[in-house]
Length: 230
Length: 409
Image 1 (cartoon, helix red, strand yellow):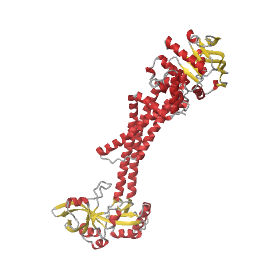
Image 2 (cartoon, one colour):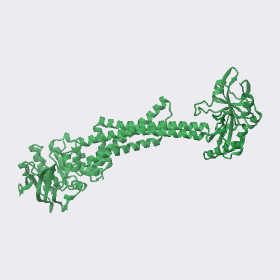
Image 3 (cartoon, each protein chain N blue to C red):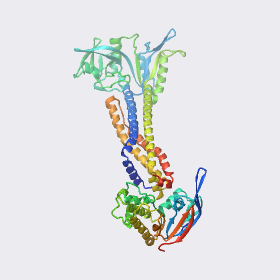
Image 4 (cartoon, each protein chain N blue to C red):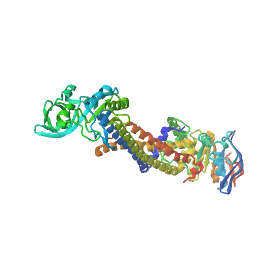
């Protein structure tokens, strides 16, 4: 099943009279259950591509279908709902709420889909257990290591039963050993829970965990190939 | 829709994180709400004081004063020419249906002696109707009767202040006092009335039958003369018709022609007091509105701090948006935060308002009345201030671009 399909999407940023073509007629499709690495130098358009896939941004032209829905034209709140229910984000800088416990951070997405407080606690604890953080529910981000923080973020991404994880350089702030642990977690989620994973990375050895690599340059896809462990 | 209790908990946490800042912001609301409550209490106290003075005067009261005379084109003030008589009073009683009771008055000041004590006091010659008109019960003894008035008996009713000055702790009933050297028997003691609206001690007086005052104490320019006639109308609604009936009757009795002016003045005291009450209302309103200005300033303080907070927490807003917070989720979060500030401030302000009202009563000696209504009003208003001044920062937060917000350092 085609989970994600973009048709000729472009993104143009205008600053005064200067136009910047961040994306130019990008067409790509990703099936459910894929593990895709998106690579390319900075300014190549890969972040813009990811923002559009994540419904954080809308294309200037072209269409974006998510599970067959043309979500490119959804309004702000409709996109928020998509992000809440279907997509989990994992960021380079973790983006956890400071001075807030791991459990509460994981509960956050459920706060916005109206789940009662009791159910939230249970599911958040379950999600933390799933990423190997049982017993750290009450720790604040400041009391957790980088790898642990990223695992809290992954738990948060998955707690609403998202089927897609969009990870923007998830190992950029981690050392090699922790990076490997986080990538193992992604691999496990991909193979065992059939979560579709799309991650942006600079590093070849991180991309090697994926089974497909899409390379961007100057706003276009320059290569799209199966790879790694496939 | 967003989970309100959880949002309230989140906002408490956010406010606790900046204790000093939250406290200072609340201070604006505390002062505002406190000032509103205290000022309304002062206003209500003033109104209550006037109302109690009105009731001490007796309700539905009309005063008939003798004439403004015109002598050779020069118009004199009212009361310059004695024109009223005891018969006028009796006629008003008999012939004006809107009148329930009449009390003619001939008064003066006299030295009163009992034993070795003496005291200068107001002596009021009147009829038993006085006690009804002024709604003035006796503390002990009995009132004088129409019989006493007819016979010009030398009996008197005395006020508390006179009792204190002449008798001390002794029971005055049945004792004899000498007014202008004429002996009078004390037959009753009037209950305490307190100050008149003009600030006179109403208990510093002796009431005697009007005829006795005319014949034995003050004398009259012509037979039956009285200084004023106090009239009680049957009800507040009858005041106007009573006034009209009195004027008609007296014009007829005094043979005043069509084009001539009245040789008497009818004054509606209750109306005058109501005017005073209205001005007290206006004063209360004025105090309240000045106080609400400070509440408004407090609200602006909240808006200011919420704007700072939105800027500081841009990244948090970005995270919340990325994981699915909708426009109104973000808005409500900040509005609830502003409301939490203003409502906590409101509660503290109510306490401050009540205590400062008490302090004002204690030190300035003013009557203050804290009404539940003013508390509700101030509390509700502070909540509205939170919503109103919280809305713009919340609106601003909800319009942030999630991508930009996530990138914000």
